[in-house]
Image (cartoon, rainbow, N blue to C red; front, side, top):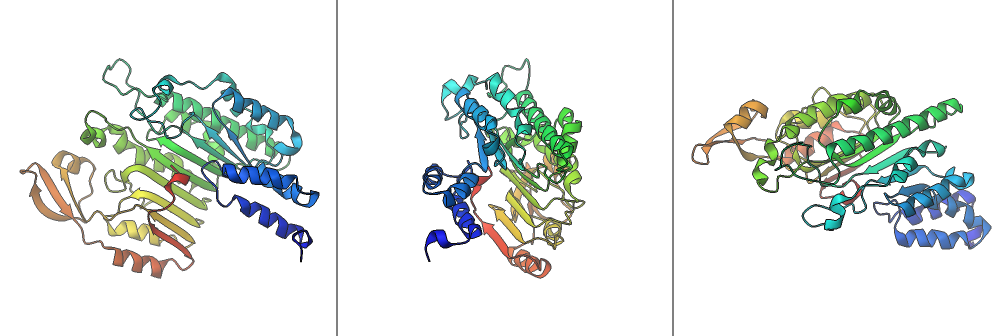
Length: 388
């Protein structure tokens, strides 16, 4: 049998899987060129190759990218094929103030880029948005000369989030007005979300309306790193306040309908700082991925185990904190010690040592007996570059 003798559905599946070797832009440069070539082979292959090629659109913060974006929107046939959009807020996704191009330290995206984001509602088939910030962040501290300077300030990040959520809300409203209520933005990915929950954003109608339609949320959280005193990074107020507010304002409203959830941190989280998820339950959750999430309590395993609908579970770089030391001030303020083992004093009497009896054999056994639908379990180190 010749290739072109295969059913159209089979040909489409073959073309679609040319993109399985994808990178963080949706498809690799090599695959993009392959899809372009396949479009020119014959009519039978042109249609599925075109659908695959234009399934994801990418908007960079530059004039050239904006012009390509406008050309795409001007073509109603091609723009109708777009299902997902990747929006980069910064030219270099790996840039940091320590090892990045110093010329980018003063970077500001052009106004045309912001206007382009506002045209998201012109994509009638839009189902997913992937927003990617730079990984360097710092809390705005006006008037403090020692504050860390970054191109994307907290205020600037909020402006972009508000812009994107408004565009998504408008896209959903357009779908409803057109009688396509089921065609909504269902998936949201945010890379390098700063660990600050802004009331102006989470209390807005645009934010609430978008969350009402989401079925997938994938977030990697970035935290401010104190270059001068790294040991003080953990003492920043945002480290302690972010996780309960993120749970209350982002996760709890999504709980009834969320089917896929990814939460990654650029530092360890779960125990220090604490993420108390005991009151949180996702009855429809099928896929859960956690990165840098620390285990120390039996209740954390219980929380994972109660999601009986899980089919996929990834624990990327998620250690058991079987031994750790904290100073008294932090322990009294933020650390739950009821289920921990007191191992005495350390550091010349300045810190308290803690341990626990939690071990991986118990975790694996509990998950095996409690998650009957689980078919994909990935502990260890995974493809972090896809989410952070």
